[in-house]
Amino acid sequence: MEKRCFLLLDVGGTFVKSVVATYDGTIIADTESSAPIDSDGPRADIERSFASVISQGNKMAESKGYTLAGVGIAFPGPFDYESGISYMTHKFAALEKVSVRDMFRSFPEIGNDKPVIFMHDVTAAVLGELRFGAGQAFKNVAVVTLGTGLGFAHAINGEIQYAEGGEPSVSLYNRPYRGEMLEDFASKRGFLRSYAEVRGVANPDTLTVAEIGGMCAKGDKEALQSFYNVGALLATELKPLIKEFNIECLLFGGQISRSFAYFEPALAQLKEELPSLKHISPMQNLSTAAPLGLLSRLREELER
Image 1 (cartoon, one colour):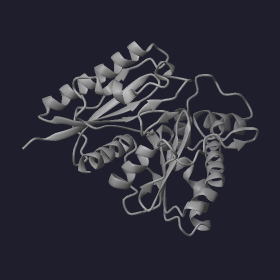
Image 2: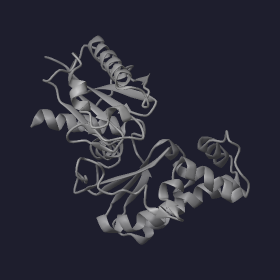
Image 3: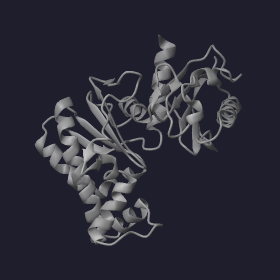
């Protein structure tokens, strides 16, 4: 019996991460890889990077005795995820108004007979947690991602809520806050900013959020306060959304959520004030939620 698998890609500005997963949702051991990509480069260079990732992923699948059944790609936006057309200009400008789906179908390992689907990384993460992670016991689930940016997506009655074209239906990152965007205060630069404000002096240029998290682990009061302050801001901004959508499960993803314990205390009030909210935690699959969401969509495509 043929063993089918999916190649799942997470496209960033400088790297493309890929992994091979079985039809039932198991990440196949030793198939995770990362390849450089120049999002500011010409189309030909970007296409070569994608072709290399697809070729390598297909070889990995075959070496494990699997046949590639489809490809899922988590791609940054603006992007029409239904049509597979990119509208970005701040990066991947060479792909503006290009059918990225047609590009992938031109690779011999894919062709026209395999599904190629695209999702926003945060909507993919919500779906991954709904099907394979901490959201499985709930119908109304929201995910907040904290990294270089601030992401938000949610599901109601187990269905991801999309805007036209497949973007998340709610845009949180660009909400006005203190004359700027919320993302400026609740992302990598927001955590760094909070630490500088608590200390009253500018941070060293080399300081990272992970290092501040390390200080929290050692009980540093200023570091702990800075994380608490960002958590409190998130609680304030998320409260009306949780209430509006009757969210039962609130999950956090992104690299900063590995230090979730240090801003969690500021979120505790949400469960006290909002009866619908039963669960707050990091995503169960911090590194693989988005690939697992892509896998779930691909299975739906094949089962239609």
